[in-house]
Length: 407
Ligand code: PMP
Ligand code: GLU
Image (cartoon, rainbow, N blue to C red; front, top):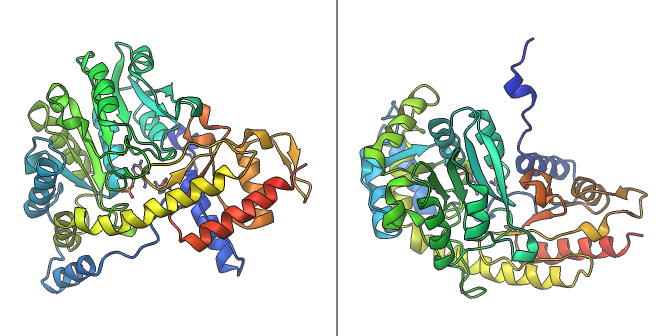
């Protein structure tokens, strides 16, 4: 059967693939420690589950408006105004099947073939395929480990051209766990403001998971609140990470600029694609959004302790170089000093992919290889510490032993 060129060259998500592989090995009875999934190990709060059950019983089982019910869009717009200081109305909000779907739709709505989109790498591995599926050209603005995984205004300016239609900023960052300070984000935003046709896409899915206890840069700040950029920022967010609701698939984009034209375009696109999210989830999502800050606060404190533990244990592995994470639940060590070495089972380690494969087979630890996070991410692996402290200690113990046994 014929397949389009578009899908022939498309790689599936490596993060989802590693997660699925770890689950499959566990189902076979193997004792796999999973640092793969970018998925909190907490359960969804009971009040949100109850709201969904009540909503089903109340008969919310028919089609709902494509961009979400008015109640849900109002709840999101209220949070965006009060918490994120983004001047928006409900009509600027489009509710999507996870923030992933929001990001995909935004690319489809902003990018024409040949347009350039700048990503700051290491970057979440779904941005590149989303841009390319829209016909866009990915421009990587490198933020290497020696710069603490951060770019700066000069580097961003150099990456932008008159063909740049968008820049994606993601703080706290997947996969590095690094946060930009308010001043740093403002300075980057002002570079984008110099290009009158460029849109800032701010992916704030980890906004509630910032650890000011670890770094003073770790703040939740929305560049869409900066007056010069307010009209040209699309903010992405969702309930997956902050509210431990990955399986519910609820995200959104807020696009107040241009008289709400981007939100309208996303709605038209979505009306031909998925329609709205499941109707009975919408009242539960509204409840979750209303209580997002206080509910995610409890999970945040657990993640701070885990972030500290991961940094401490990674710091003890001499062959790794690391930047301590101060947000999200990721660490992204440079493992290149293991390249050229051979494992106890005779596997030669010459890339992040071979490292990840070998350690899963030999030590039953799942990590995500860096390659798909960008050109400069090839020397790294991603560890997601969305698992408990015992698992973190055991998993990093296995990694440390195994790395020490490479020769
Ligand atoms: N953005 C980033 C940076 C992510 O890490 C993820 C992955 N979970 C998403 C967006 C999408 O999340 P979801 O679709 O679960 O809302
Ligand atoms: N975004 C999460 C991660 O990076 C979940 C998997 C995915 O959607 O790619 O692990």
